[in-house]
Image 1 (cartoon, rainbow, N blue to C red):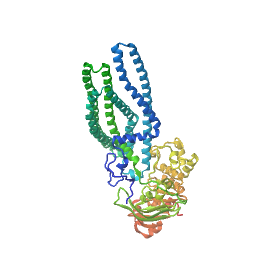
Image 2: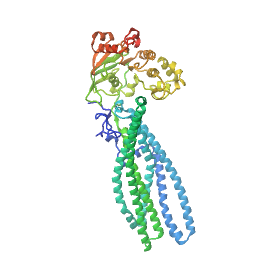
Image 3: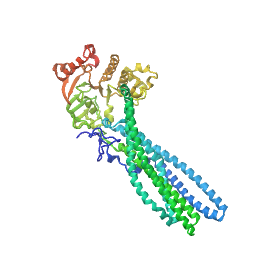
Length: 634
């Protein structure tokens, strides 16, 4: 069975972020594992975010309950004021009622502040925890998981979707609880005041309930469409900005702007349709509430005329009706918000609930002591996105500790795939990969990858300082150790000439540095990590002669005493390797030293002759002067 990037927990929808997958076999997230889509499930999940802070949540709820209870006292005070103070002309009673209400309102204001602060704190805290959980989960997925998912779409989940949830948890949840309390309390007091009038009011509730269910479903679907459109637009921004050099070089600014504009307009159109639905939903609920008030005025006025009801009773009943109507209308609007949050919550928990297929084994073994022996045993492999194409077809290769092995062959032969399997970015579909005798699938990922360092032809630097980039693989490194690694990598000289030395910011992906400088920083990073095994992915292919010379000197220091796999495209850099392995069609076609392979003929000699024809006459491809490109065989 092909290795999958994400373990499926059940049936899977072929949709992520509003886009169909680029490949039907691409790793997908489980719609079952992702959980909530319905508002009640969303509410349970959102409240679950508050569980670690239940003390503050309980205090906020108590403040809400007491404050809402005080608001239900107000109509009774009005009834007493009308029937006793106004009707009987008792100013003392009116003074007492007024003073009592003032005290109650002050208490209610204080409780409102406490509730607002606590719920805002909880909302911000829950959202911060959620952001960390989503990002932490993203970092656990293997690289292949990201190949079919636009970066901008994933970033959008951490931005737009979290903002939606922040509003629900931080304010709307509190408002919903307050309105629910007032709705329930108001209804109870309405029946106490006058059951017959209350029954008249309730004539409007069943149609409203049906409207909530029917329109709410459409709102949920439309909300997800809006979020999907926004995610698609964000993905286009990420793609265009990250490739701005290419965009401008091909004069495609207008094209990219138009493409983004179409995405934004699509999101606007979906949002417009959503606004129509939500507006109609809220309007219908509000009309229903105030229609009940009109009904009460008509029926209650006739009851007063018959002497069946006092003016104070009717005033109190109308106030309770207003409270219930406002609470009901607000809850209808909040239900729409909850429907909108359902899509955002689903998308975020879709990531959190997914289980990476490449993970630590249930009972990992300790990484054995050793010096970096690497073994590929009958390795077979198919990429999850291309299950019909077998990339490796029974590769057997043993690399002794301290040995330098070069992997050469045509594009697509499987050279980089072998390195990815060693790092366990993917799992083999057959055979085994071993490091110092241990199957890499039996090791903790941190121990496995901590024993391996990679230097690629386009090394990735982060937007921090030079020192932070060198120490990226060893966060506890001292200043002295960082500088020592830089010296060994022939980087110390140019670093000290930078404006702030080791504290100089290198910019996104190291744009403030030249190609050769980035390579030497990457080599210093690998030196400081002190790995058992080194993987070099043609680390000098894009450099000028002077930069290449400096990088080659740094590489000689890095390779001392370490097992190394060199993925070679320029054959001039591998002639002094201990062993050259020629991959062709997913199999090892030839293996030996440079001279042995030249004598054998075959694919290796063909590749060498091809490069000799393509290189200019004065190129240093295979001349004796270039024999020190790599250390001599050991």
